[in-house]
Amino acid sequence: MFLPILSDIEKAVQAGLDEHAKAVLERSNELAPKDTGDMIGSGFVSTSDLIAQVGYRDFVARYQHERLDYAHDDGQAKFLETAADELTDQLAPTIGRHIRGALGG
Image (tube, rainbow, N blue to C red; front, side):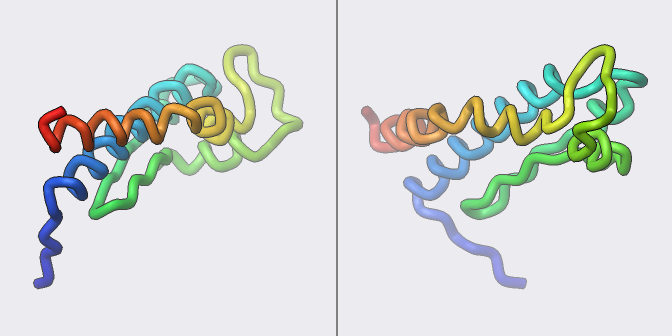
């Protein structure tokens, strides 16, 4: 099995990506429809190498996300996309903070 060896800088970037992805999931959960809570409970963050993924395992999430015609008493469509867009400007500073920490600064 091939296991990548990450440098200290790459580990710092990975930690920054993970922190940012968790913030996106948290914001997405705030925006998501909350009918039963099952969908929000299925949210996940997966960080591997230098890739972070945020999503929902509940099969209803895709429909809730994409259907602009669904009426939601509490929440909205495009909740994950909106969260990612809102937090885009925080990605580089978060990664930078982790890199500075890895370099002792």
